[in-house]
Image (cartoon, rainbow, N blue to C red; front, side):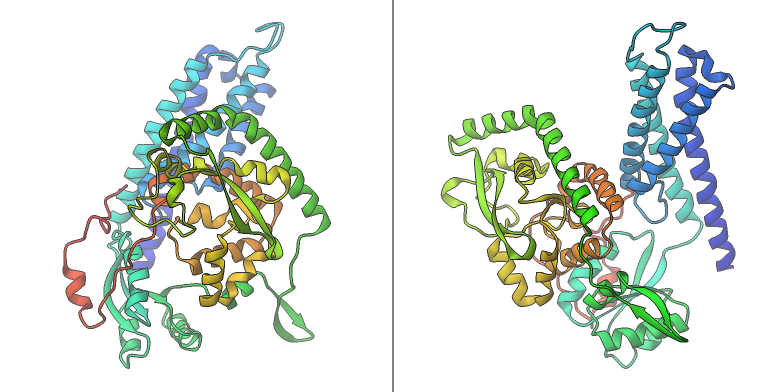
Length: 473
C-alpha cells in the first residue's frame, strides 16, 4: 500500500509540474501572440523563441529549486518559481523584440509592449501561487506525516534539531525522542518511519545507520568532517579491491583565471548598477547620526591573510564593539536595521572584490575574534581558509546569520570540495533568494531551546508555538 502511495505521489507531482509549465508557456505565448500572430504559425523564428523559453525556463527552475512540492513549503516554492519565470520572460521577450526588428515589422530595435510583459508576469505569478499551495495540499492529502524519532546526545543538541523538524509538521511528526546510548534505542527505530540522528558519536552513528539501512528506515544525520571528505571522494578499484579515493583539491590555473575574470566583471557591473543605492545609503547614514558612512573591520581570507573588509556602518560609533550581533541589539542604528535586513550594508565589499581581497563566491570572512573562538571549539574551522573569502556563498544562501558555526563550516567545506565554475554561477543566481527571505536569513543570535529526554512525549502533545507553526507559507 505504501509503495502504491509513493508511486501515486510521483505521478501527481509529474502531472502538476507539466500542467504548471504548460500554463506559464501558454500565458506568455498566448498574450504575446495577439500582438505577434506569427507566433501561432510553424516557423523557424517561432521554434527558436519557444525553445528559448523552454530550455531557459527548465535551467533556471533547476537553479532556483523548481516546483519542489512535498519537500518545500509553498512560500519558498512561489519565490523560486517566480524568480525563474520572470527571468525567463525577460530574456524571451528581449529575443522577441529583436526578432521583430525587420522590414515587415520595426525598421529599428524597439522594446515592444512592456505593459503586456507586466500583464504576463502578474498572471504567471497568480498561477504559480495557485499551483504551489494546491500542489502541497494534494501531496500531503495523499499520506499523513511520517512518524519520526529523534536520536541525539544532549538536551542542547535536541534544542538545535527539534525546532527545525517541527517547522515541517506536514512532513514529519516527532513521535519519540531518545538518547543514542539508551538500551531501547533500536526498538524506537523499529517503530518509526524516519530517523533523525543529530550529534551522535561517529561509531554509534555508523551502527545506527547500518541498522536503519537494514530495516529500511529513512535516515537524516548531520555532517561531520568525514562526511565532507567522502563527498569529495570517488569510488575506485585497485585490482579487485574496492576503495574510496580522495584527492587533495586546489583550483586549477584555468579555474583561477575564470574566477578572477568573473570577480572583475561582477564587481564592475555591480558597482555601476548599485551606485544610486549606495549613494542613497550614504546620505541616509549621514543624516541619521552624522557619523562615518563606511566601516572597516579586519577579517581573514585564504591561508589566514588579514585584510580590511568595507561595509556601510550600521552601528552607533561609540558602541561598535567587535562581537556578533544579538537579538534586539541596541548598538544597531535605525538606518542600520534596514540595511542589515536586506544585506545592503555588504555592497561596499564589491570594492574588496575589485581589489582582489575577496571573491564573489566563497566562504564569508569571519571577524578575527570569532575565528579564534570557533577554532578553539572546532579545530576544523580553519579548513575553510583554503578558499578566498567571498561576498556570497552556500552558507549565506542556505543558512541564516545565526546558523551555528559548525553548520556554516559544513556548508563552506561542501562548497570547497565540490567547487566548479558552474556552481559559482548557480550560487550567484541563487543569491537573489536571500533578499526574498530577508527576515529569516538575518535573524540574530538568540538562546537555544533545551529539551528533556524524559518528558519528550508531554512536550510533543503541547500546542505548537508561533515559531513552530507549520502554516503553509
